Image 1 (tube, rainbow over the protein chains, first blue to last red):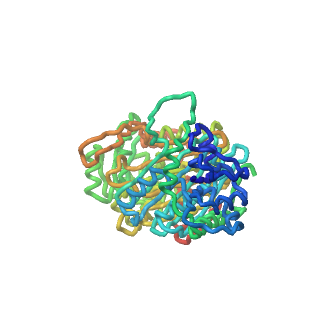
Image 2 (image 1 turned 90 degrees about the vertical axis):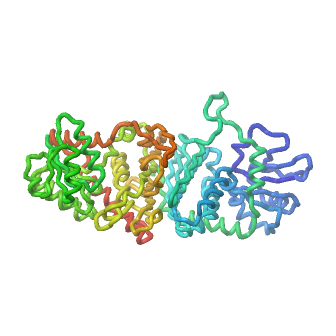
Image 3 (image 1 turned 45 degrees about the vertical axis):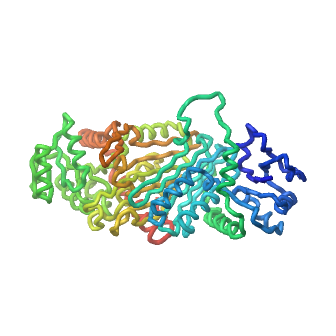
Length: 270
Length: 326
């Protein structure tokens, strides 16, 4: 039984169930080792008892980065011991486009200097994982471009419209400067944009231009994710969840939040 | 109306000359250039008189001049033209330092001549349409902005700080800094920037990312880099995304293009078919002179845009935010 803990995916996965899957609310259950389930998705936050049960079971456990970040305080309290069947997956790193770009960048020479621009816009379902998403993406980028040496963060919120926009201006160790911007706006669709300009070339990818279904129209507007391929991506691109990874993610979290003293956060309508 | 061009050091001079040639009510009548070969060639191309002596050039009956010299010479040329009572359209950036910019503004005010700064992006059709939508309140309260103005390394005097005042950051920040100020009617209060040299082997900056905060709390980003590779399908870009409480709109000033695929070294080219923003700029300047009205883009606009670019350099050097007086 594979256990996937990915609370931020609830919105994307709550429709079109596949037989081998079940979504599970955070109710105490003993049957997650039940052989009838190949994969169990936990799509709501866990309490410490259930987390301990899951961690001490022999099942492979896959945490999404956002879930893992949210569970860091709980993980510490639980006196857990991480072992080789605990994994974490980072949505950016699990995306096939990013994997291909990473491969191309490594071929072209990631060590070369350049300018990175990443822009993510979130769906309303993912909004509650806003900062977790930022931290997760910056962790993935730091694995490619080197440790974050300097980060400067600005954020703008508007309570009435629900708008939230974060700018992280980052200097990575490998002579890379970057703007990472994350936005929620009721007027923007969920999207990811990535551009890497280096000496002699530019790599650009825009999720909204990469749908193989070029155009058309359906009554049902939101096509559900293909869960099978999503699970395959999670399994393929996850990495061992170690205390070192937890620590590195925590440090980025602190850098982002530490860069946002209360008087620096400019909030609308105030 | 008779127009003169002062120096063809900046490549935009050719575009402005071609724009004037299309007009019925203006004529390019004289060219001054201290580079004789370049000046003579331009005069031959545009069928007008060439002057190697600036004083002689300014004694002619031209009504207005367009200054397209190296950035560091804008002050000297503006002062001389203003003293000769010629109205002035000066290529951006207004100058390489704020002291020169203030002197240019004051001399023109004292001499009663127009000083307009060449920010043609204001005359891009989609950019100006977005301005109208903002003014009508279509986007609600503006909360954040994202901009880019990337290009290729122009080489020549542009990469000699003595003449240019700086590289990509001074060259490409001023356009979008002006557009953001224009859209918001507010000044930038804080600048944070990374500036470096990534794309060529010289010393001058060719990479820059700016994070700006406006006096009303709007936050913004700008990519000013000369990061487009030699065979990029177009010279560069001008883009802006404006996020508001009632909507989000993103504009690409050069989106109106078709793709040309070929077997040449440049296997893909974007062929722009939109409205020429330089024509809008030249038409506006000429009508300002004719009507004797305040220019739509003032010397002060040029100075404030320059101030942001200079603050970006200072921020990168000090690795901290620079706060500007608004």
